[in-house]
Image: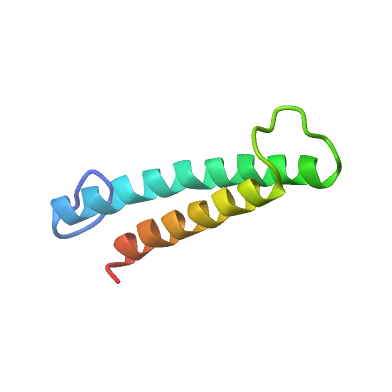
Amino acid sequence: MMDEYGEIGNGTASAARHDALEEAASSIKELNENLRRLAKLLNGDTSGTMGGIGAEIAQIDRNLHEIERLLEGVNGS
């Protein structure tokens, strides 16, 4: 039987994957914002940034690890 996400099988697993994908999408949006701030910093524009280049790179690294973790959960790895 098909669940509300169009998947056949365990509805709980499907819902968990859906939730993880929503979290990953949110993390990707945050990553995009971090990359935009880093680009501004690299162009010499410090307006709207709280840290330096190193702080932005560290945040980008954290975002990438979070996205990887979430997607591993989606794939069941």
